[in-house]
Image (cartoon, helix red, strand yellow):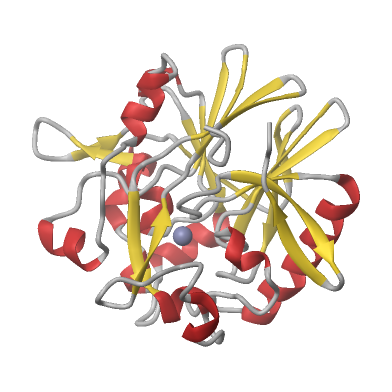
Length: 286
Ligand SMILES: [Zn+2]
């Protein structure tokens, strides 16, 4: 596929945009202060005003090193949850891995950009004994310690986004590693902590042989959000989002970074250029 290219050789790495299906959120919440007349053509809402969003975890491979960044929405939810969020698991993370010849056991590291259910849902899976267990038995999982604390101490605004069964079972097996701030996880794979969407979100940057790629999580969740005013209504610190978005786009234009979008239902990877003072998405036409 051209416009949905899910795989790229990238220096020493292979980068894959995986799929755990898609879901829907209220368009007003997804696009924040931007009026519906501006976004509805590019993002047609359903009868409940919900727009389609992809669930696109990223896989970074180099030899036996296999890092998954975010784990999709998983499959522990009930029908009510499925209905509210319009979840469509036509493709699953498991199938995405299988398609490239891997299983959950092959994953060495899981990086959670943050712990919202659409990013950490696939961290865990129902087990045969009626409990919940980590989906990736041989992986260490990495999240910012501040995000871990916020997930455990959620408030009335944030608690719908955090489901304890997505992350507590991983801590119970000793697989969760809490880190503080920016860190190189493996050579060429670094996390950058920022605030904006929440207080402690981490983005993942890949640098190899003079090329850079960035996994944008919910700071720029879709190509539509490349436009500066498009900041989700979920963001706790929208002006922080704006600031980091401007910095990322400026660097991405100047150094030709590959951008990887976690929630775009159509374009998983691409570049950004400027038309006047407006960022525009550039598709990968190869
Ligand atoms: Zn999200």
